Length: 115
Length: 115
Image (tube, rainbow over all chains, first blue to last red):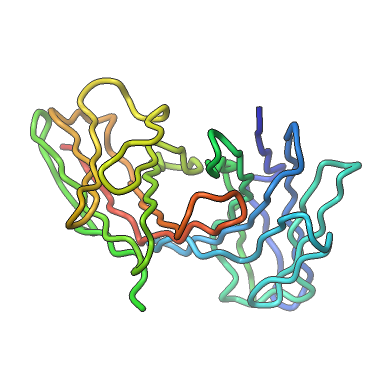
């Protein structure tokens, strides 16, 4: 069975400092992995996805994530945080079930960015 | 190309009433997924539909909840005799096909409050 664990429920950084949001997954086969962002009272926006191509995935707004099979991790990083990055971030694994992709969400990490 | 459209954005119901949530997928998408987000939690899969067919409803409560995606018109998630525990944000996503590498695009959600 597939599962995903986000190791931090809250992360707080200062503007201009690096961001690290941690995610570990469990999958019995090569997974599809995603990071989505949710701003308050908004829908979810895809930041980036990994689908067995390059292990370092670049997404929108300067975010990137590295797939590490040996560590079963897919951590999200950004070199320099911006105030507008404050939001909830979800690590998601795509679980193939009956030929389609059922998304399994982590519990989320709330990112706060301070001036 | 309009995104996934959900309405209403906010819905207030009293206990025992019915809630009907609508989702229009992106143009050209024939696959719809419904997710529920309880407060302070990640999204949980409820049901996956294609036109006129329910493919997987394993995440949907057996009673009071139903979903449809007719040949014409939006997908409908229906909750009968709502209870306070149904208060949540309900998100719809769509994709052009079911293959594992396809992205699911999310709507802005319907926030249901049960008084």
